[in-house]
Length: 300
Ligand code: HMG
Ligand code: MG
Image (tube, rainbow, N blue to C red; front, side, top):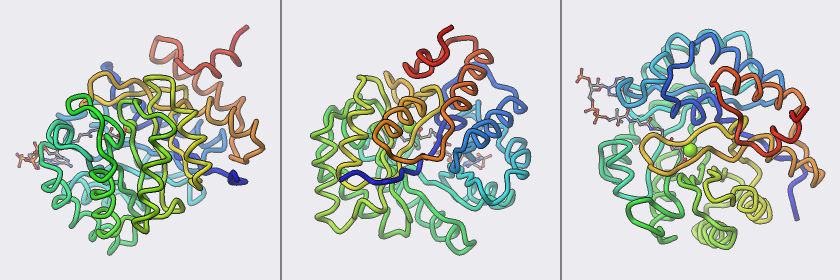
């Protein structure tokens, strides 16, 4: 059966914006996060504490994060942190939720983190420990869970191995990333079944689909049928990854909400307000949202 309620982990301000060439003013980012919260999103990934040269768009994390403090305890504001330097920066600002981001493939680990898969895991180990000691919760992202632009299809066992390490390290939640959007529903089911057999149940899993091949919603439905209840999405379908060629935006939050509400699944999201936010953001970025639902609902 399907879950009665799904928690949407909104990644627009982070995964959505990180790929934008033109720097978005920090005031616009802060307003974006506030509008998303006003639309009923209760988890909004705010930014990343990475090396500013690697992701120049998010170099203003120290400026942005304090502008969100009025949102209070009702809105979770996770941030990406690759290493202890990033953790120090995040904790200094009072972050309560962090995410490390591993790769299932060597090629992407090198491109995204300048490390091998195992070197990256070793880099995360003190981050996860330090975050937990500070009382913060930890999400472990895993990229290239289905296919990799350099290596092709990724074997399920390779993905399970890294998931095991992230769980053993102390990650509270795993987010399975289809970074380049090549997954199809059968592959999603096979990975979730393999994780379940490994003792990593759907209750601690989130899915993170990019919509490059138009499969993100079908893949989401397959994941829900396997018991997953947390889904990552990006308002208006913003996004991509600067270190993964050919990746387009994430599953659009509006498309996800349309499907979930149609299925009678609660999200707490006001679709009208969310669509208005994506239309507003599209105006700031100077191009229309790629989300089919945003286009349909904003058509005059
Ligand atoms: P590196 O060049 O190997 O860094 O990069 P290093 O450890 O050798 O350090 C070099 C210098 O950088 C040092 O300064 C550090 O202090 C500084 P120096 O001593 O030379 O003056 N430095 C930092 N400064 C500020 N904040 C930091 C930081 N760390 C080091 N946190 C590193 C390694 C991990 C830092 C780099 O590769 C990096 O920042 N990568 C981030 C890439 C990224 O953000 N990618 C996008 C997110 S992942 C994604 O989008 C996928 C996802 O959506 C899921 C999916 O779709 O699959 C999550
Ligand atoms: Mg992503």
